[in-house]
Length: 313
Image 1 (cartoon, rainbow, N blue to C red):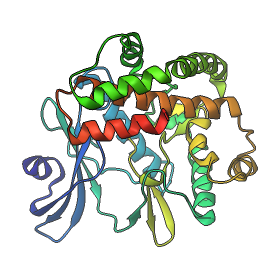
Image 2: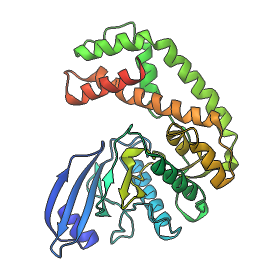
Image 3: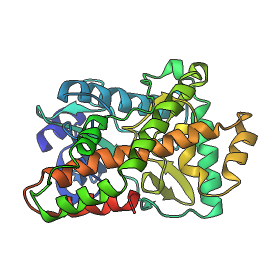
Image 4: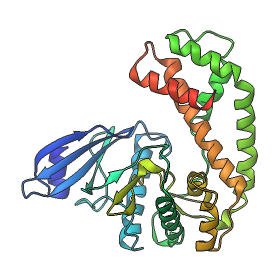
């Protein structure tokens, strides 16, 4: 990684401090021999199924996502976009190995929230305003990919539903997960059916697509001098506005009203429900296999078990 920083970004690192944050990525705070400070991210190309189906397509998806963030910041003048720096080869991310990639960001001294954290009125209003600006961006001038309400792990979730009549006895939490899913199997099947119906409705809005961040929750917001920045742009995509808006809909009854006032766009509550449902089903599809397939209870298994309980209780 240090060699790549010198070769691709001309950054000669004197000190690295590991920052244990996020999932599927690894982060370091770096200081160079000239005193510059940077934030270095190494992404695991095996852990981002929304970007691609293998390491090559995942890297290509990450490359396009970071190029979109760079273009939004530079060409669309969206200062709230925390974009990575371009490397010598012209991209904002480079391959570190077959499995890993590396990107470099300016070091920003700010405060990041936590997922699920509530927002003060001033913050959610500012976030709605930022999303309105983002959704006005000229999609044709950035390399943004289309993102629907994909459920990448659906086969795994359906496989788990089909296996409820057999023991999941690799570890104690696996069997408890099976019992919990069995008790709520009818509900999950109904969620999947509703997901399919809502996807069909939203697909008809093909002419209303905008550039969306994808996950504008508190953990992807950084506060710097009372101003919000949006970080983590690997989920950026062309979609209906509700892909972002469902996450602010719960902040206040007035959040969606404010968005309509700022943009002139009415908000589709069916699409809000689709993306809320997609998030829940995607989490179940990601976490149930972790518990089900592990031969022992690890920290990751305990985290997955806790997440499943969040939805099935």
